Image (cartoon, rainbow, N blue to C red; front, side):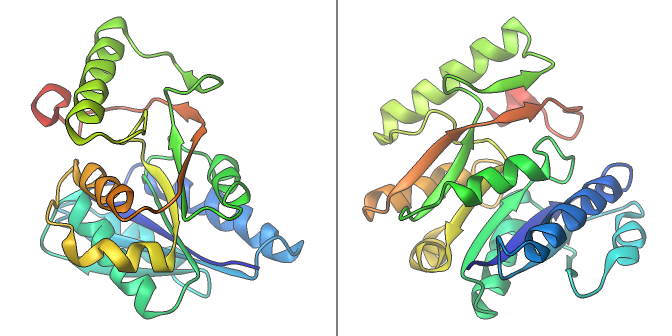
Length: 224
């Protein structure tokens, strides 16, 4: 059975992360109880926060959750530091998920259940069967599709959705590429998946149910 680490990057998430942690701890504690996984740990990586994110998170510190805190920021930086910590502590499967619970714990659990003999599983909002609530606006949908088409064409990778914030990998898969990842902002996923593809790892893509949240923390056009 899997020994699971779930990395949650957190930059100024005081209003949203509490509910996410409650739901994830509850769901995966039950998965341990019924024998679906051996154990789990949620690793919250606080990065460059100027609000009370740490005060919210510290209420949950315990057997199922620990915190890493950095002055330096960037989602990619936070996830990579979480990866390093999880690799050092010998977790067999390591994933990450956004702090706003766009991906509910049941959906993250589906990634783990779908791992099988693959080296990783990534959630996709663009495969047939995916559900978005509320649906993307026409402008956002068009921009996302053009962006992903450009990425797939330039890097020759098969993934329909490189940016969905829910992914899991075997420890060995991450360990093989982590020292080569140079991007520390939103697009770090692209470099990571590109490196995994180059090395021949088998990464599945799974249609997901995604809850669109407030995008105030990211300028969609600038980041794209």
